[in-house]
Length: 104
Image (cartoon, rainbow, N blue to C red; front, side, top):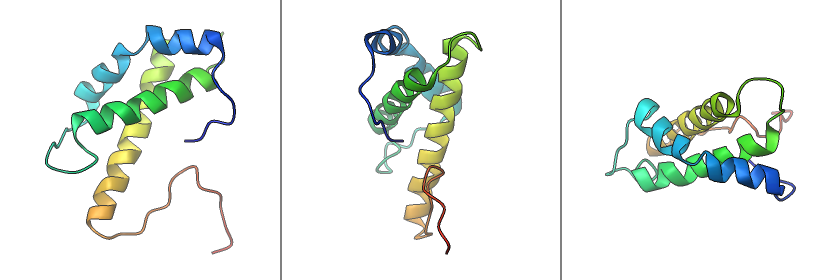
């Protein structure tokens, strides 16, 4: 998940107003494992914050409510993060969903 431009003031406001969605999404959809590096609450919250910023940057008004869109983006990012952490523990090579497609 990469950002090419800083968030606008409107996008920053969306993030500030909707930070409780991060905690709610973690508790509703993710199984916290404090003993596994990357799956503790603080790590998940940090990943969720990045996902919320991404949601604010990519949100198009006029569609779904921002909160619904943001929860979906946060949940999907956290699930991918958890998958990657668990795959690393099992020494399985992973490819992030946003990685460029190559010839290999």
